[in-house]
View (cartoon, helix red, strand yellow):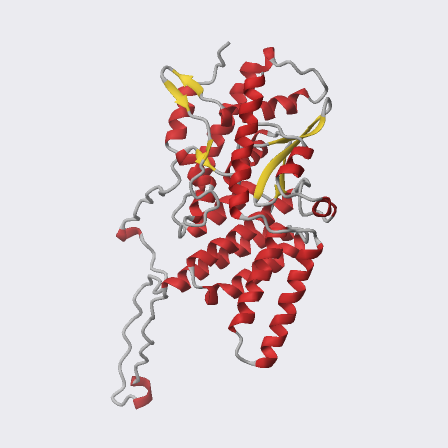
Length: 392
């Protein structure tokens, strides 16, 4: 059954959604411009000039020459503006928007070269494809509980991200796959970005669940981000089965027990609230605030970034005290400050602050998951998917 909406138009809209350029702004004709510094006015009549003018009235004040800001100052100003907007979301001054928060964080790293209009246009087009998929699948959807509408919306997003979607004659939307190269953004922080995922259709356990959550917000589907060691996944709920997990690394639905057994999750970390809980809309924005701090660390030197990172982590922990990545980043920043101290009294104070931060982390039950162990875990997820497919 075909939906009356033109899907060709949607694909063209998607093609236009590369979010690395801005639309040209027409230049106002010079004759129509109104000078800002010297407003245009009618010339005053020329008064007679006295024969003797006091010397002080002839003095000319020469303004100091402008000093061009350094690259670090430009970056600092951009990151500060981004921080302020995220802070206003968290304080309730601005409405909470995960889509906007994700864009702001990535745009700061790309030196303000992205277009929010184009980013939103790309997301809107994908959301409309999800609506069409849901409408076309409704007659065949085998779920009849009262929350059928919400389950169907989530199913449409899942299908968009997992499968190749044909939207016209020879026109297809490719699925979004896991990018195993530099999956933690260690060499290239942009590997973590939704904007990169939209262009390349490859991402990781950061950008894939972020995109899913943004699409869920756009289409009205209920879903939650959830944390595991070095990992983000999704939690959903339906009346038939209760809460269940969605893993976008492999597009499977692992149980809580499997995640705990395979992913470095202990009972203590669940009790302390750092892992496997559902995140609120405000906590989602906190994730972006810490992403912003991590991006800033990669843009400037450690000495220059410390104050900004400390400010970001303090605000993050004010709104989401259990966020383990904020706790870790705060502790690492305090350690760097301790190591840079040359005065004994300052060193003692810095050490005390660092010790408090690391003690708090230890009390949550957190234990560091080695990078190689996480890589092995990712491959084990795919192995489990293969076993399931062979069995069914």
